[in-house]
Length: 362
Ligand SMILES: Cc1cc2nc3c(=O)[nH]c(=O)nc-3n(C[C@H](O)[C@H](O)[C@H](O)COP(=O)(O)O)c2cc1C
Image 1 (cartoon, rainbow, N blue to C red):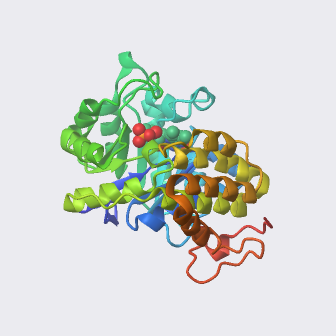
Image 2: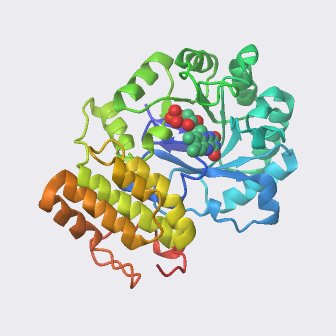
C-alpha cells in the first residue's frame, strides 16, 4: 500500500530524515544516485534565521530530489508560518517541523524537543503553519522530554487533530539523546493511536532492522538516519528487501572508495575548498569504516586539505584492499572527473546539478 502524506503519494516506505551537517544537497544527490524513490529531507533550517538570511543554501533543492521536504524549527507561530511559506516557494513537497531535536542550544529557546513540554504552543505552531501553506505538513518528534514525561501518544494525537499529515517518531526521549536503544514498542503505541502515516525511527543499521521495525511497530514507513552515513546503499537495500525480500549485492570496497571521492568532490565544489574539505573529512571516515586495514588511512583522511590528497589516500587504500586492479578501477572512476577544468566528461554523473553548482574553483 503506498503511503499518502496529504496529496503526496510515496513509492517507497523509506525516509532519510533530516541530519544537520549531513543531509545537504550533495549527500541527498548521492542517496538519489543509489535509490530513486525514498523520501528525503533537508537539514533543519532555523525559522528565525530565515527572516534575516532568506537566501540560505540550506533550502537549495535540485530537480531530481523529489519527494523532498524542508525541515524548519522554531517556536514563534507567525515566524514559523512565514518560514514555511518560504520553504514552500523553494519547491518543497512537504514541510516538516522539528519537535525532536534534543540539543540544549536548540531546546533552551523552546525549539525542537522543548515543544513536547509545551503542547499548546506546538499546536498553535502547527495551526499557523498549516494555514500558511498548501503542501502537506509533517512533524518529527521523540517519545517525550524524559522518562517521567513520555507523552508521544497524546502529542501525536494532538498533532493529528491539528491537521498534521504524517509524523516521524524517534524512539528515545530528549534526556536519552542517543544513548540506550530506541524503544520500538513505544513507537508501536503511537502508531496504534494515530490514523495518519507514522514513520518509525531509531537504530536501523541493516535492511533486516528496517523489516523488524516495521513488523514490531506496525508503522507505515521507516526513517533511517545514521545508518546511511558512508553507506547510502543501505536505503536501496532496505527498499529491495521490503519489496522483494532479497538483498542487492553490496558495493565493493573500491566502489565505496570511489563514491567517497565523489561525495568529497561534490562538497568541495558546492561549499568551497575550505568548508568542503572540512566537511568531507567526517564522510570519508564513515565511507572507509569497516574496510580491513583502513585505520591509518582514516587517520590521514581526518587531516586532508586538498582534493589531490583525498584522491591519493583513497587510491592507496584501494591498492591495499584490492591490489593493482583495484587501484586501476578506482582511478578509472575518479579520473573521469576533470575537476581542474570544472567539466565532467560523458558518463560521469555530477554530484551537483548544473544550475546549483557553486562558482568555486578547486
Ligand atoms: C548528525 C545528526 C544530525 C541530526 N540532525 C537532525 C535534524 O536536523 N533534524 C531532525 O529532526 N533530526 C536530526 N537528527 C536525528 C535523526 O534524524 C534521527 O532521528 C536520529 O539519528 C535517530 O535515527 P537513527 O537511529 O536512524 O540515526 C540528527 C541526527 C544526527 C546523527
